[in-house]
Amino acid sequence: MNPSPPDLETLWALPLPELIARADEVRRRRVGDGVWLRGLLEFTNRCTQGCAYCGIRGGNGRAVRYSLTEDQIEATVRRGWDRGFRTFVLQGGEDPDWTTDRLCRLAERLRIILGDQGALTLSCGIKSREDYRRLAEAGANRYLLRFETSDPELFSRLKPGQTLARRLEALQDLRDGGFEVGSGFLVGLPGETEETRRENLRLCASLKLHMVGIGPFLPHPDTPLAGAQPGSMEDTVRLVALLRLLLPEANIPATTAAGSRDAGGREAMLAAGANVLMPNLTPPGAREHYTLYPGKVALVRDGAEDLEELLAHLHSLGRKGLLERGDSLAFLRDQ
Ligand code: 5AD
Image: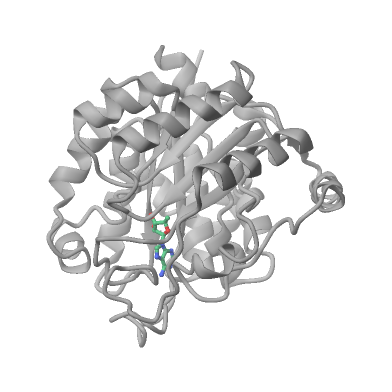
């Protein structure tokens, strides 16, 4: 029997240490001590969108642009596979050179490596319902598309030409297409209020997300938000703990933005309910140009020893790094 879902208003009022303790307990009971490791591949930083917070926004003429070739992506996935990774997250900007046809051919090629032991996650923005359906058919299993903020006005202000409604429609299309679906939001965007944050949580809960990624907003010097304050780590930890309580069986990453905000940021998220880490497998030469925000930290450099180090680090936190595909329990329950 699952306990009845906790009431957000009651939880919101709890002191942070108590909230963290509760979230950690629920995390342990519902998803265990494992930390799923996902290999992240940032395959293109070209982007047609103009999101005010993002360092790879189309309007940033200072960004050095790249797009990996199919061969480079395949070789990186193969290398990751040989090191033990079983989930690969292909993330990129909204790059018109990466048509759905091309992404489908890539997914089919990667599926040969992945078989049914591996999972392919895509994170490359808004596409039509039909495009998503085709991507799923070609072998993509999961899709990440953060709604970024639940405030429709703030959304359209920060994402010119885009609407929250369209984004939510895309999330529904992904679910209908059979994807394991992840979304989430930025913490501390300029213009957001405490009510926005509560609404961000309510939206995650009402979308019944299988995966939820959040991280502090970090101002990038070459964006219109260069002078803004970064999101706070304390707020991020509080929100991750609340997410674990609201969505006990979701997969929740300790995100790179948190680790870049504060040394120990990812560990703080792991202690407050998170159960996923996404080591970056993007080849050197490309990864330093995937600068969504400044000061991006790496989790694993290049080579198997670093993975050993990460596993040992997780062990020292009382956790266990796991490489298997680790489908979200929330997703499996939906099937
Ligand atoms: N600070 C923190 N996170 C950011 N993202 C984009 N720009 C920034 C920033 N300046 C996040 C967005 C996006 C994810 C891939 O990266 O939430 O969905």
